[in-house]
Length: 519
Length: 100
Image (cartoon, rainbow over all chains, first blue to last red; front, side, top):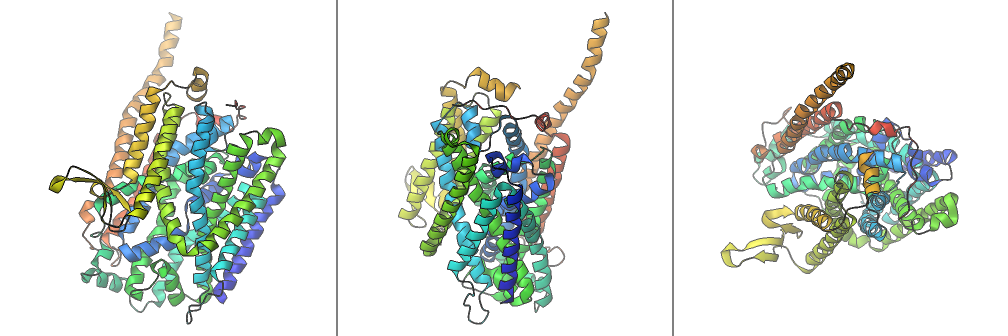
């Protein structure tokens, strides 16, 4: 009961802080979607980080390390420590400058102007929205699951806040923040949320260490000494090919619409300086304790039915109730921080790239465009909530969709690089890459549902010398030659499409090239 | 004659700056490649120990240190390779967009 009260109080504070932004809101899209491009350096870093950190950073990381061991940190966290700040440094800063100079509020708006295209921009928008929607739905599902898990009675395991109510609470609080405060409200709330979940890991490790019957060293050396559990403290079961190809996945970060839109919102480009340096440290602060606790959970709790809940179980078992509540609030923060940005990004994209672009803005004006955006936020959250309820049992499908969405956004990175750095790139190159990525994702989904683990999907040659180009790995995911992740052929294929079709087609007009490259 | 002297004086800092950029760019590129390559620590693949502080497996400790190295790399890039000219947009009002 105590953790539930703590979390509900926290959620009320969050809703209040978000709604305070309402008072400072102006009725124009620049203010609603980008807080008038006025976000200062500290708020920018904290909010950008919250945008990119989902519940997976806390619950998923510990769950995966419970299953696969410490290698998860190198696979997912340290690769992000390297790639995400680099993309912010090279791409994010340029996006900011272009947005500031030409007034762009979305990636598609930039692409349309840079490549003098109209419907091709709409195709890029459609693919981005299609890849973002499952991510948003799974955030609400995650919120419901987390609240049910935290509020579960240790004896009966019955949740005080059932899944249905948990999803509703998260959806309502997120909607309140975004509906009332837009980007400003979301950023204000993010500051509180990020500080909370940055502290989460260290506090959780410190508290749990006090209550454990044995020392950390005892548990870890016990795992290392046993042949059956040794893989948890090494990477002997992790394929090096997958480990290497995963370093391409964080390229997706800058292509996520909510991340790109955040880049537009900074007041000064210098905000990126602190952000790119602090970003790896923040990832370290969250992921290292969570991965460690996931492995420790295996040693301390043994086999549990739901590995993704290992951290919640550790808290329930080894932390005082009030602290478990605060730490639970940290987890919920991670869920809601990214969810709010996803909802806002979808609303920004629909309003600017579809509604305004196809005449809505001219017809209804700025003020009504903001009303449209607010209406869209309510509708999209209600739909996401209903889908989260209706398809609760099929959460795995959304998880797979999100996994492939990461590869899809990563594969769209060459399009952004071409737009920013290659004068000769054309809209046809961008279209070819977008269609390639979309077709690859559909093909992957079809192959994954129609085949079983170990099946070869496409091979060159026959007999012993046959080269398996695509096959399903033991997890049932489509893999590329020798066990590489599909993100590798997707990124290479997308880059090839941009290059080839750009060379084959005429470049944009000289005034447009001069506008973006000669000024 | 006077004009020539002025030209020479103006070229000096430019040449120095160009030289610095010429030397710095490949070095920074190599540094980025080196940090990227360091992520693939195959030598730690099957090792659990030595454990840092007695409880942190070497593979995890290495990648924690790698994260800090990534932060140092970014600090160097910010110091030495910060994109020039972007800050001039901080105060400029946005230009109107052309419809397509």
